[in-house]
Amino acid sequence: MYDVAIIGGGVTGSAIARELSKYQVNAVVIERDQDLCCGTTKANSAIIHGGYDAKPGSLKAKLNVEGNKMFDELSKDLDFPFKRNGSLVVRTKDQDRDVLKKLYEQGVENGVEGLKIIEGDELKKMEPNLADDVVDALYVPTGGIVCPFHLNYALAENAADNGVEFKLSTEVKNVKKSGDSYVIETTGGDIETKVVVNAAGVYADEINNMVSAKKLHITARRGQYCLLDKDAGNHVSHTIFQLPSAMGKGVLVTPTVHGNLLVGPTAEDVDNKEGVNTTGDGLGGLGATAARSVKNVPMRSVITSFAGLRAHEDGGDFVIGEVEDASGFFNAAGIESPGLSSAPAIGVMVAKMVAEKLSLSEDPSFNGKRKGILNPANLSMEERNELIKKNPAYGQIICRCESISEGEILDAIHRTLGARDLDGVKRRTRAGMGRCQAGFCSPRVMEILEREVPMSAFDVTKNGPDAKIVFGYNKQI
Image (tube, rainbow, N blue to C red; front, side, top):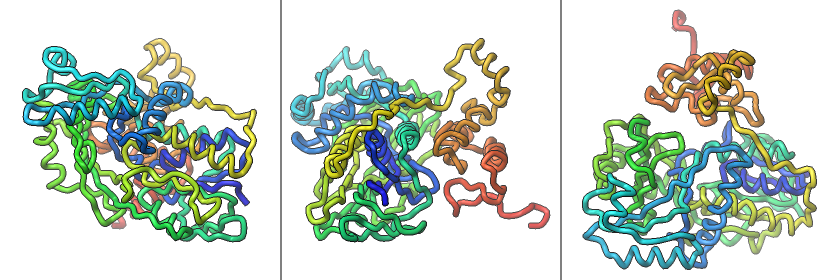
């Protein structure tokens, strides 16, 4: 019998797990995929929003601002990449200035600090590559960029190191009330728990509807992106937004914490909750749309494209809290943008609710620090040479595009909740994320996984058990 079972191992579920690990609690995270960070968290804009866009008084507004403020300390404690590069919401000469002013006023009401509207030479000096039609912009100095993979893993690893259990490759099939507890039927057997936390992303409505007569409905809203090479990474220094629409914050142009340039997303509602395919129509218009705010975006430098799904609940706001007709069942549902920005605050909010429900005591042994994977590029030449002397694996470059060493890949595999497939290694180390998109390094990463997990070459996959790569010996085939 667990005290708490969290359904979903994305950034929301992992943030809740970490906050709960501050208490004396027997908790488990249930994740259907072979690894964490395989749903909404793996494919988004990687933006930490300031909080000007959400409707005042909404959970989105409250938790965005609260979560934003937590990132400086959290990134230091958990050792993941984060930068406050600031953002600009730009207006072109054919758009209504009152819309920009309303965003400013809304941001002030939400408690966003440092907002101001800038124009003319000041604006062009900040961003020389803004489109010629741009006349002014809302400057949001608290905006930032983050690596969502590293954030997710950092939260989960720290939670696991503090006693939270993680059950991967475990899909929830049903949730049933059983007396004062719940039985969660999964592909790995039944799990009994006093409290359930539903952080299942685009499937959170289905989980909720298993136990509650108050039904939720989540629409999968697909966003498609283009990622550009690092030679385009300095085209802008701030995150450039266009004036938002009813479907979202529009197409943005932003640097990433790893030095690339990201353009996107589109916004389209789809029926398929697994519909993360890109389309020619979706990607084809990104360049022209981005050009409305940023000129000369070098779309010829695109190295990959991808799509992600946002969990849009019909009510338009986060759905967080204990369900009225299901005591002990807590939702963290409808977590779309600004969900990544809000995740740390959502974790605090839900953990407090659960702690009050179960009368939990704080754990004095909680350790809130975590060390990420060592990046030799951050070392001086002397320090790097000394590292290689101690561990020659750091002198073996596996991914030439991103200069990722064998030592980093070994760390990714052997650390808490370590990688077990190619995408798991890629998200933790960036091996395979460069210009050749894993064309050269995949065989070597496969060999390392085969040796270190250990596993058969026939069991090494791209992402999960069904994405096998090796099917036989070439001379036999």
